[in-house]
Length: 303
Length: 303
Image 1: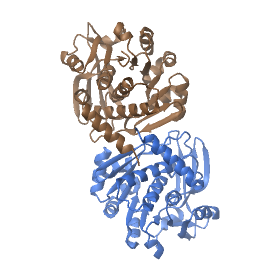
Image 2 (image 1 turned 60 degrees about the horizontal axis):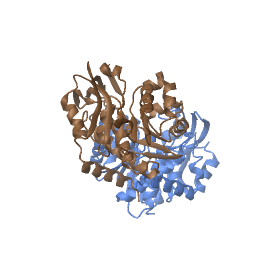
Image 3 (image 1 turned 90 degrees about the vertical axis):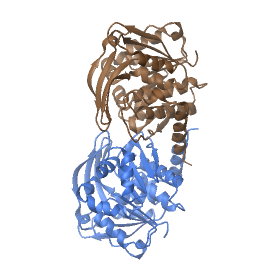
Image 4 (image 1 turned 180 degrees about the vertical axis):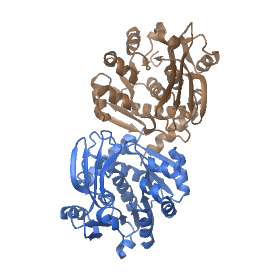
């Protein structure tokens, strides 16, 4: 169980429109994008909730990837549904509708197998629920969390309490600035590190990602993509690749291991944006991932 | 003369305000930022114009760096003066005033030494003047140019004519998109390459830079800077480090050489933004540059 990741987050159906087309009620949600990515590296168990309308083919797609869905509650009602669109620059999602549905009443309940997972990823949900999940865990060797602007505005205190207990924080640029009131990302990361997490990952979309660890800074570029179709879930796919690699590594507290995790996160998210929903990442082979990773890393090895 | 760069561009006095303070009539201009950066790698000759008010200490600062100012005409009147400010995010310069002064009547005249330079950098000036300079050259082995939104809007035809004769184009993201009407940078670069330049460098500010060469793509991150004081001239400083390294290399048509040029450009521009005007780059030692370069490159070498 040492290398197994427990992820707690949303399982959703997304309707998305971009310049390259649209999709209706396609599989999405933070726990889904994360686990499809992470399961390429290590075993993953999901705790989440869906409604009675959740399509059996979505369930099968996840199970085929060896993602354990024992913790996926089915509740009377409908599955969380997000409807949004992106402009040509793909920078900001415009939300057209958010129907929380059964997700509104989500109370994560962990069974024994969940509690004994070595690694915990708290995807972007209410920080009080995140802390509640953490309280139920036996003794995970690595705890990471994500969050969003909404919780920083509404539940900053809860979030800060949580941060004192996590090893690793994922945020995007704007969230890092919002949480610290500091524009410069190096300074912002220092403030975040003082709140608890030993490692801070700042996701920057097509500007790449930054890692702050023990006073060290790594900035890496995004892997250029010629046709961005749908960026929904790119952040969670990044976190999945990162955490999946880290969970499978003998010791995560090593800058070289963390640098590789950053690169796997980058590569996995570059696949995610190439098609709608989980179409690209759901069908990936190990050799495709390895190939793109080798290419990404070798381009950056400036001799 | 094979490794000597001739740069033609503006020599200016800048008044800049940022969150970290302000400076008045400080040394600036594209040819200045470029040459101070490039001269760390290779001999540089400047062709430009200043007014009678151009401070002798600015001239001495450049000459101390072995930058040849034989081609710096002094004309009756005042030196080009730009006044602007930046907001906290340093993304866009807000121009408060542009006084072209003597620069308005700038007609680049090359002497024999200028004409025989092996490398030509046409900084951001009227594309008709850029072409006029190119016509005066003997036979440079490497020609690069920069441009800006203003010329793309006003003189696109002239610019496109010029592009068919240059080896290397520097643009920023927005210019690449404006010039090609294509948002995706890989596709935009392909369109630009079809216009003539074999290598395209897209400058992306704190998102790094991209190189497109013979169908290959390199994206590298900016070197993180903890205190950005003044980004004025960062693009020209990047081009200076890039071109300086390239001019000194035996053959620029080599992806490994170009990747190192990208890294030196990145490192030089990271120094530029750390202080106002040319304060940081004007006083740099080789070992400071080498140290930051080694650190930058080794961080990216993901093993």
